Length: 173
Image (cartoon, rainbow, N blue to C red):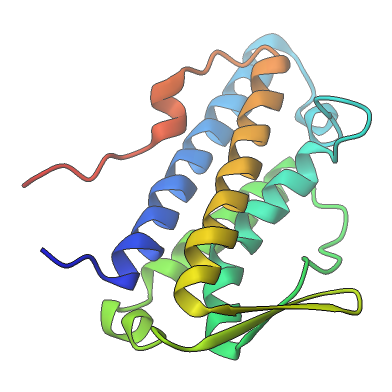
């Protein structure tokens, strides 16, 4: 059985985004149940030298939807200013990324195979094939930022477990 570019990128991104939407909902429910202002979570960090929850979720959207957009354009860069999104705005950002990816067809994504993507960071340029960019750069970044957001919610007392992180499994029909 061959695995397509769509399967290893968009299908996996959708699983992560679905999980992130789920644990964001649980986070909001926890805030309502405990009287915790969800806006305090937005600026939380695991450590002083790490970026806040807000950045983690911007990066989740950027390394999923933005990665596919970058693969199409042949260019990718760190996320630009998204503004000071509140908790609801971050939820919407993740939902919008998921909706955009759901609108893609496998043929559209698979047609990107073999293309080039240049990652620009400052004056540095890192050349990739689309496949290597999605699999060795964006996928690990997506998981890193999703995990960090999950961990910040756990640190805030949100009752989450491994199953919440895994999302909807793609089991045999």
